[in-house]
Image (tube, rainbow, N blue to C red):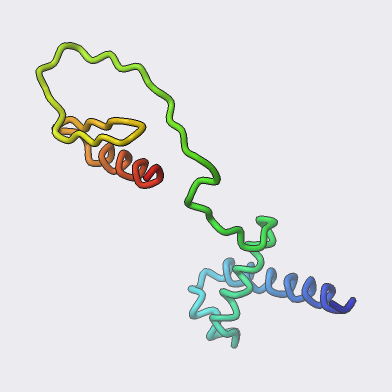
Length: 120
């Protein structure tokens, strides 16, 4: 990369930072402001993205959804009073048994299934 490119990029970032601030303080929508200032809307959003990335100090960090290593769960003591309820669903895995009681919240069931998906 030549010596001029970083200077040029910095200058363009400063220009666009000012343009974006002007749009925000105008009270107009992006579309209307771009039309009135002869700016392509795609260019506006491109530079907005670059300025936000620079402000965050990152160049598009990808989100990793899968764990880096094995997932472990802590055993939590449960003190259930005497109950006559039996589980509505029992899932036997090689390393654990999961019991879902009748009436469990959908969020709880979803969390259990997502945890199983990671394990299996």
